[in-house]
Image (cartoon, rainbow, N blue to C red; front, side, top):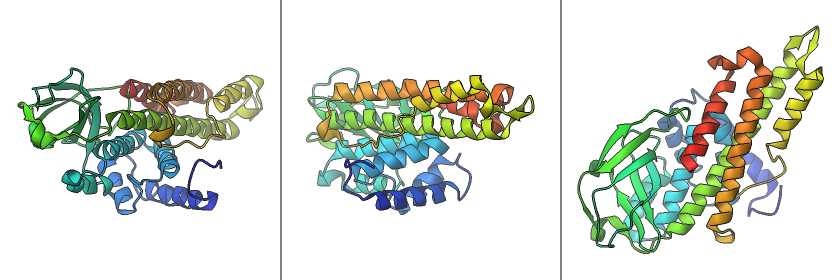
Length: 307
């Protein structure tokens, strides 16, 4: 572990242990249930940046949509800040009871109203999320579920993310929907850093799956892991996982440009790792029960969701 966190290595290990137990307690495809369970455990939107990144990484290995939902929650909490007017919403997000998606306002507003707007993609991890729309220079607009028309859209991966197109049903006044003292830039940085953490977790899960399969699967009377070509593929996957880096969701020491670059590199690396893991599995990799094909689909969709 590096010194990027206020927690000790043992404390971070304890966080990982709790997360792993929760993930092992039942099906991982029920994002809403797991979101609530993590919230009750105090691990959904926890405010320790390095521990938060570590949780996102662990979640991504099992259910990438859940990890991306956690990133949305962290970004929303950052955007809302300490404004007491939004205390109830912050509490619901922190507890995992509120599905939330963070997006950008594509067209500048006048700061008086948010005109009827369509958000091309929201990933709220629920059918009726609250949308927090970031507008640099203005703050963040909060659009509650009852002000939205949501139309699900199909995507390659991220099953459970609730990916949809959402449109506001009317113009929304700033007096009740704008968090004027929000920090949209920091929230956007958290989205970038969270995407990087999720991509790292996904790449590491692909590595674990590839190594495990190569060790137990035999070809020509010996394990796949003893074949030179497979060994090279495994080394390529290892180079894509950045195993020594402990990330952080702290937006205070990195620019938006740098954070976006980190996310781009990590997402591309996750695609490489997942595609190579699929190669190691051969034809079996395309069967859903092995999980390799899901990792590749999730890696592609995570890159698209972050872009």
